[in-house]
Image (cartoon, rainbow, N blue to C red; front, side, top):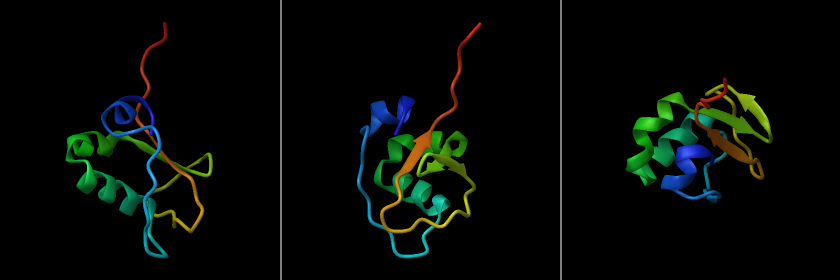
Length: 75
């Protein structure tokens, strides 16, 4: 997890999902486990194995899932 999510939860979390779970299911599970971040999850991007994916992306055993909140700043 990155940004504010990392501050509220942890930098690395291991979770188990049934076969065929989606990126959207990951967001739901994170929101249920850590309600304090549920309001932030609507604006995060999901990356699987270092590539941005859609909510429908199927997660398989061994995938690395990253939750990336919006980035701001710059000039």
